[in-house]
Length: 221
Image (cartoon, rainbow, N blue to C red):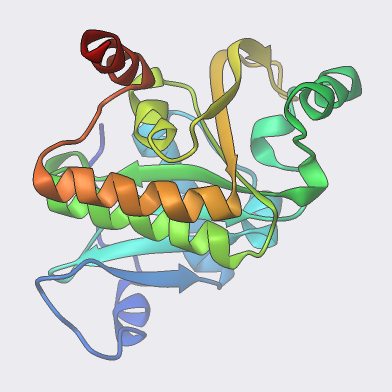
């Protein structure tokens, strides 16, 4: 994968960090067309998937800055259409509502998340994922939705967004066929689960997947 490069807008992004601290990951919202185009290109270089500029302008796009470098980012979208629900028909969406009580209009999604490959140490990962959950809660919707093409990524969110609503193959509007994993939780349960997840991460008691958690419960019985 291509490593993150300092974009032309790099100085402008850093200038918005009022109190630099090299021990913390800082988060900056991108707003200008040049910044959003850079994010579009960067996410494509990391994932092979390219969100539209229309989507990025609609959503809230954040980058993570650590020790003077951009190491990752994520997108929070609280307005329909949600990126992760675009491949689904009205019949599918109605089924989600009937089975899970999940409605697109009540939901904020966390999408287009990435971390620069050489910066994926535990502390940086924890700060980026925790920040994405906090920003999603700040959107004020009833539900928070997480999605990914790879189960290794969605497993991180499953520790907080622990209701799986879909796992299978879908086709997006461009005709691309890919595997999609979706999970969600209500915002108040997100708060509870996030504190539990951070505690497990900090104490070395993190549970990597729901399946692993189930195995541990069975052993106790």
